[in-house]
Image (cartoon, rainbow, N blue to C red; front, side):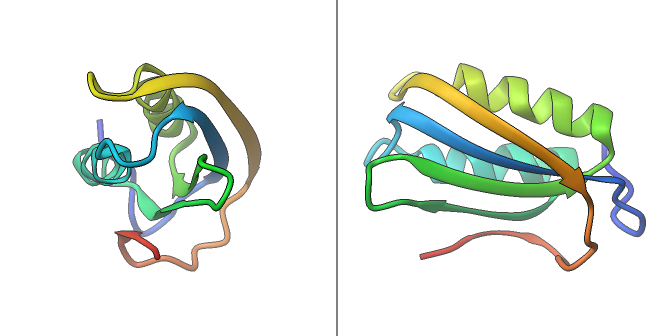
Length: 98
């Protein structure tokens, strides 16, 4: 299941809290987004959480949200707070931001 990169329909803005910095979570999120064909970015925030913005088809973003909630073995995801918007179509890839 891959998003149509030419016509993303939805935008997911998610804040992920827990033990998600220093454990490879950003690259986990990057790899999952690339596998699903999503566009956007992921970054660490000063408060220890991780912020994700992704665009694609809503069903693909729903699947991605589930992946973010499960996390990877070395992380401990306590909460994922999603906010949904209409896609803006401003991304041409998915990247880690610093």
